[in-house]
Image 1 (cartoon, rainbow, N blue to C red):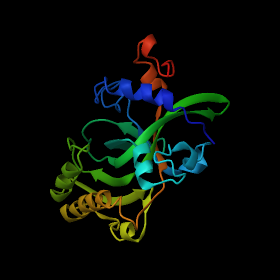
Image 2: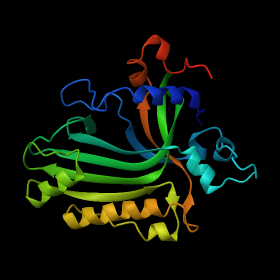
Image 3: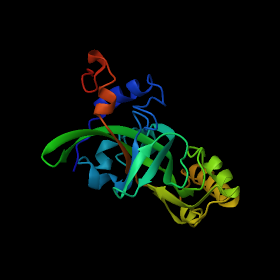
Image 4: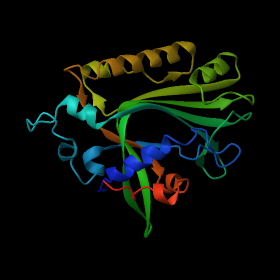
Amino acid sequence: MHTRNPLAAIAALALLSTIPAQAAEGDGAAPLLAFQPIAPLDYDSFWSEPLSDAVPDIDGDGELSRDELMAFLHSTTVEVSVYKADSSRNALIPIFGVSERNTSYQVVVDYVTYRIDEADVDEGGTTASYYYRTGVGVRLRADIHTRKAGIDILNLFGITGAVSRGDATGTMRFEVMGVGGELINGLIPVPAEISEESMMAAMQAVAAIKSNLYDDGVWINPVVFQRAPAYSIRRVATPSEAVGTTSP
């Protein structure tokens, strides 16, 4: 179980708003402050404070309403993460930029409504601090193999164009995070080869799921789905801005 530190997260959000989105540590490196996708984790199994206690009871009725949940998840974003397959280490390496020739990549796009909290994690006897995004949304994952260099792999439609030209091959998966119900289940596209048709179907599903979040037949149960090392934000702050030093 992890203890939330929402005060530190507020300071982190203030810092994030002042730093260029494409700030990077080196050529081809991932963005300095990029949150990385993780397998979705149930809120109550990850955080020590139950969701029912964490969400403010705005209307005072003692019940956890959909409106209160969505107010708790107060931010919205589209986050793109790109990884290059490294066969020598059997790993996926975060990158930022265009493709190389004859290389495999994984592109993850999260369309999410979320909040940020900080937690300390025990990593083999040492303690590391991370910022976690908790919320609901949709994740698209494209697994591609390039046949030429220079493909804009940060852009799903750029990937689709490359596949249609024969410059790449790939498949796409669609995952709903923290949202469910019969209506939502009926909107989820099946995994498919990347094509203009499958991409359009995915975009339509994203729009439909977002528009149905308040439907009575849809349930919401936020999950933890991204994290970023806290030091990556702290090290670009001045001492007076350091995360965790802000007074209430």
